[in-house]
Length: 251
Image 1 (cartoon, rainbow, N blue to C red):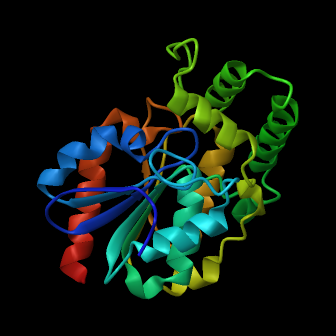
Image 2: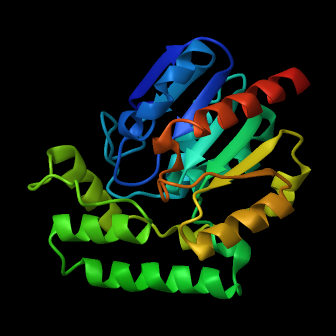
């Protein structure tokens, strides 16, 4: 029994949606709520977000254990950004419980080390993280959103409590660059896979291309919202729903 705060709604195949950094589950997946007429949406808040307890530090391994508890008898798994790294780890650990896997812009740097674009992205994030401790929370958050291709111009000033909490969480998170993604285990797993990106960062595109080749996975590029591809609603929703419903027919 998980102690995470979890929102469930809709009917149909069960889909667990794992949010990334800064924003909680409800905020991250707000544009996916129309899918509840076709899918059973399970939207947890990871630790330190929304209504879930705080364990002191964002950590993809801790999150993977939490999300594994939500898979029950099987579910489709969708992860965005940091949540995409979590989803990759969970899927390798629990292939028997995964009906399909979708990852959106996962910063899984380890899968494409040596690629110049990936190394540049990793170095840029590391430099930003090293400087972040000297920034006030709003500037820190704005700089991060700019790096990941999201318009930060509409951020409220001062930050509301939920965004201030997300910024503080980000400041202490375990770097996704530390995640070793078990590509061979994922490639051996029989469930369908989909990798989605927003075409805003060459390093992320390279990571997604490697994942699509190695898993192997279907590949989709949906531009316009930077890292937050799902925030565009359509056409992401139709692409995801079609993929999941096809996976259901194969099960």
